[in-house]
Image: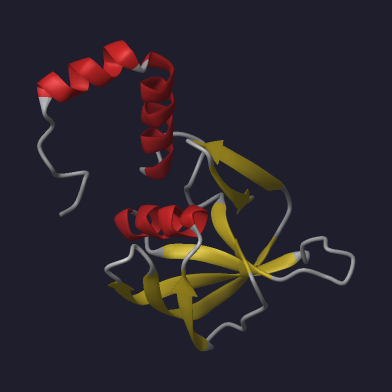
Length: 143
């Protein structure tokens, strides 16, 4: 089921708005960002998965198990199915370049993990890194 096309329970929506106004407002901003209506996840910014370097054209398989990256994958699957992968240098800093990956296959597992088949699309410069703290999800974006 796609959350963007699912019907909204008006009773539940009113309860959430009333009981959790700050969280509801944050979620609305987050949703606008994921659909490209705000300066969040759009073609100018890319969610980052910190692991290793991948080259354009290279296919790899990834087991996504951390909650922050599971959330990132769900958001990517509802958007353009793309995210970036970046490695770290010896000092622990992120590399200056990332690879934009496209999700070819996504297998959700019963325990909430994802098994992905991805392919490198292009190299992207990491000009600015933004730590996202949306509803306790801590993953990076780059511009």
